[in-house]
Length: 138
Image (cartoon, rainbow, N blue to C red; front, top):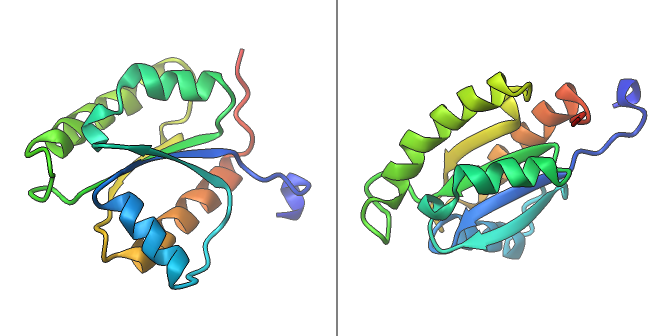
């Protein structure tokens, strides 16, 4: 952290109401520690996170965006996470094209019972964004 002069990344997390948000709540209740860098936006389904929303989030100052949803096959809206699983890799390619490192966007899955896993995902992502440094937008 010394090479970044105390830099702390601004991360926006879009968390599925039914699984990941409940997992984050469970992690908090269990007092599982993970970096406080992520600001949570509760969405009903990861499938509702549009490419436009992600791009706007970066434009408004986020250094990283993480989308966390239900595991494939467990979506409360049947196919929402399938849509997300198809959309995010394409969006990562688009980010590269516009000059944003694709590692600044992460998609992962965490159920309501996986608070420790969610904490691990957020910790790993925060460390990766610290390595990349502040996002310089033009």
